Image 1 (cartoon, helix red, strand yellow):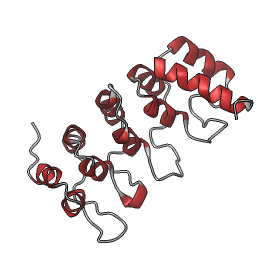
Image 2 (tube, rainbow, N blue to C red):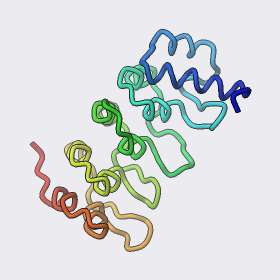
Image 3 (cartoon, helix red, strand yellow):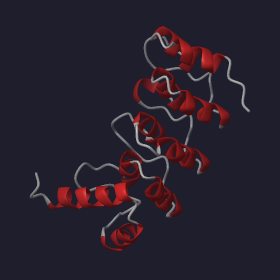
Image 4 (tube, helix red, strand yellow):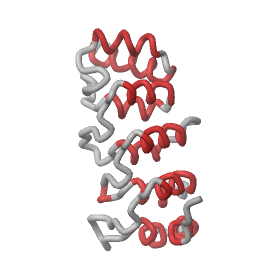
Length: 173
């Protein structure tokens, strides 16, 4: 695997994304075809997804400034905001806020028809729920499987009662 040039390139760029090395990212945008707007040559994932998973706000902001599509085509069921909510990095919430402020789809469906609010609810992530709800996340969207539940209902059904109550009683500041 380490002899694969696409894999080596991916590892280098991921390191620069994780470190917020903007000089290297600028250089990369000039020499790597499709960076930052395209997909990596190894996994075929959009570069913005790598930036989100690397968890560096500086890199994410740079990519947003480059006009990267915030609704990238992904095949794994984890669109941008679902993926961001699953991260645990120290700048997770700043990155989520940057994506929301830049127009990322707060109601985009992912795996099982979940929206970002569904994901935040079952992760008991009150801060993400608050950010999404404050930005206007639609609490009436239901899943596309099983009982077609809203984020509140899904949280309640899966035993995340505090999340369900948070959504039910949310009042923006």
